[in-house]
Image (tube, rainbow, N blue to C red; front, side):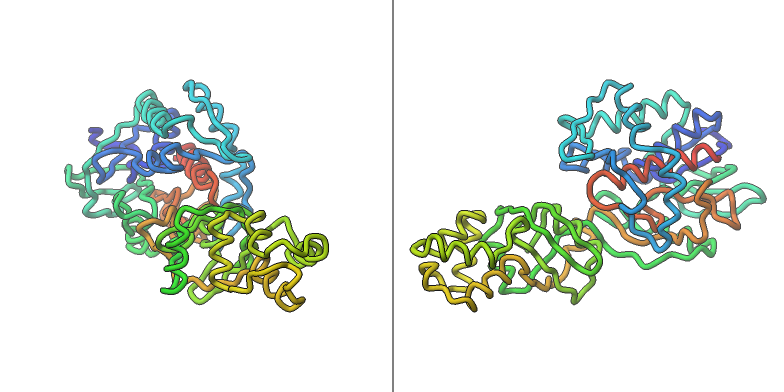
Length: 393
């Protein structure tokens, strides 16, 4: 281990490794330490194990932050195409699973191997199973007391992530460091997380577990058109994960089960043209069979379309185009993909990622109050913030 590295990076995840290889290639002596027994655990489990490593359409609008302008500089300096070039140089073939969303073909392992190889080539050392017990300012540098001994260094980069998925080793460590040095931390909450439902709706959702359909969901200022998935605990799928970033306790979701159809017009027309068709038959032609059957069970009023009054069709159109549901809550940190909130960016330089009154202390990645939507944006933020910080060390 370096006796006096130029920089110590705390966290061997996406942002930390990217910062390490960047600073290493820039000639800095870099030491990465992590309390985990393996690097990049979250990389390996992300994207269903295939790692949605970037989004070609990344824009600042895809991020949540109390300071929405903070992410612009780094995102502009390190674009998705830059990371794709690195990936392709290592012989990794990207797969565009959805528009703009790039994944690995079979496994996330090649992305982690690529980062570790680049760190090795750049001369960055990685030390695992090493905990940080204390950090102190030492003149123009920093001093760390760790389980592996004392380390004197010129700068410390905190890339310890947020609170999501504690089984992967997530903790509030980075926030504690920020507070220790007087930096503000904004309120944190779980995001990109499934919803739980109240007892009656939980029972109904459980009976539909595994059923998926494309919806248009709205809550507060958020609106997404993505698949929704019923689970034995509630609602999940990309649509629900996305809207969870906007949801607050007590909020109602408005879910359009037929986003391409004006249900009232369609039902009224069907009543006129096919009056002897049953309502349940019509629903079964437009929704997954189990869901259409469940709707009839929940709300009744099945029968011939000719027997449906204008008022009944109006009620059905509300259920189909504006199904209103108030979740009991969210599953929490255990299954949340990211943390919204974190180290307040008002105290951090958007160019160097250094604390404004303590340039030898820096924060990158998820530990900051910058959080992306679902779809590869959070990895792109990790790469961009890691590179920006690494170049400025």
